Image 1 (tube, rainbow, N blue to C red):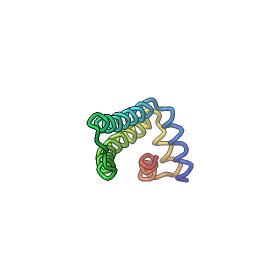
Image 2: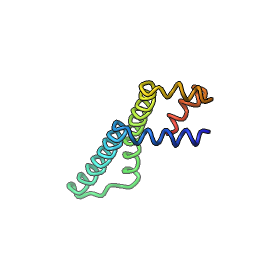
Image 3: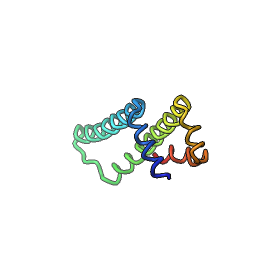
Image 4: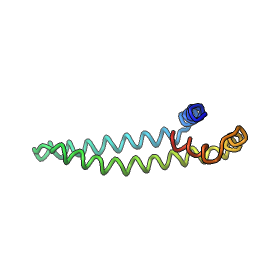
Length: 106
């Protein structure tokens, strides 16, 4: 049941332009962060130590991914009330917790 619901949510998610914009912004920030680190290291003539590089990337990317994930869940949940499909999912036998869990899992 959850697998079918995840497929339906993925189809709805692909058609949302807000999700596409969120992914593009995430990729843009990742490219800018990596480019900044590489540019700084080539300009100063130093090599970036791999442990420091991974530590910086982990700190920056984890916050950005959490923010983009929050935007995605809000976009998925808010669209349901306009399409009136949240009520249909509950009528079809899902609990509200299962419905929201599918949104978060996508």
